[in-house]
Length: 555
Image 1 (cartoon, rainbow, N blue to C red):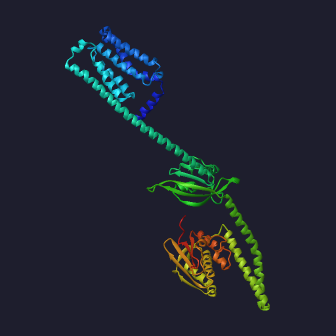
Image 2: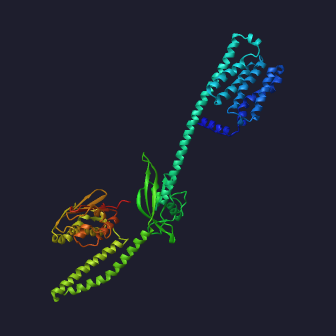
Image 3: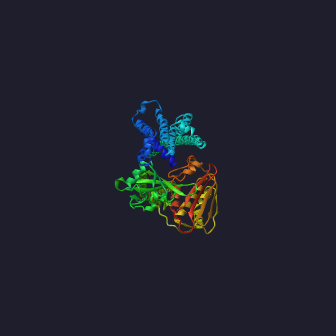
């Protein structure tokens, strides 16, 4: 490949030259050899200076080289310069016949005009004819005396030499054709590469435009940490953190944890986690400091080759400052309102309790109305407690070695009266003891909520079954009812705050849609999870997964 490229480069340089320079360069090798021969002749073969044919040959060569430089070839018909190598045969014939028998080898100079004619692009028949006839006339003696004295060996030489030059011409012709084919192939490949490069450049510009048009920051890095792709939003994020563009994830960067004050160590920064092969979503960090500090939700996915090697990662940055601040404001509002409600409700309940202590002294209708006030005030107080818990971002759990079987038994005892009123049967399939690493108070709250919901959403009676399975790492506890159930879409949203299923609303079942939200919060604070499976008219199953006995696994 290197040789054709060299010829290709030399060809380009040659084509940039003017016609006179090109013709002179083609004639130059023969002219240099003849000039050297002319310089050496007086010292090596002085007798040749007395031969007119030899002198005429030298003079003709000189005239031809000067003509190459002076004749305006660009004004003459196409390929008129090929007259020069044809006349070279005549000049070489004069030299050869003039120097015989002292220098019979001068006939070999005919190879230069043969090469010139063969490589010129002349029609193959014409070039082959000249390549044979030119050397033939060079070898033919100049006088009849010499022709009559020729032996059979001399005749063979006269014929053999032109045949050899014809063979040289054919070789050059074939090489030229092959070279031109290679040049065409290279030109075609060059064209294809240029088209591919242009298409790649267009696609790169399109990709940059699309990435810059998105409202999230995107960065792709290779396994060594060098950026492959990034858009303007991601670069703005890095500038806000004071990061060095050349060293992703390293150096001093203003990236803080959720408390907005503690700098994240380098190995916990989003891009460092991604480069380590982690896959994550909704990883919240704070970028920058002071009034310009921004909340950024990050997600990452590793790039893996076909053989399973980690080749890089893609990290996405989303500015969620407004959302985080609105959620914080919402929590603060709910917390403040709940606190303001709690004191007057406690006062109402306390005073009603005092009056009801002497219920025998009250008229029956008045006592009944006070009991209604008491029940609704207690219901409001429970709702306020749920609002406070749902608004709290610091719901604390204190896990320890806990027997879930005893918590299930306690929860069922509390719910037994309510189940009997609703004509709901309760069955359990929980091994005892069932040890887990959990906060008994909080998990008891979760069980109470799940069981009370199962009873409440079975208004026409039915059955509830509590079951549990365990392995070395996790405890899975399920609460299944045969109540009204809900659609799969509602089941996917049932843990959202203030969400109430359409079936519950149609049945006018009271509730604020906070209990299951608090339930999920408690379970997730334990490092577990909770899911709901349900169908309309088919009941519901809530399954929570908690760590088995011992510290929960790291996430």
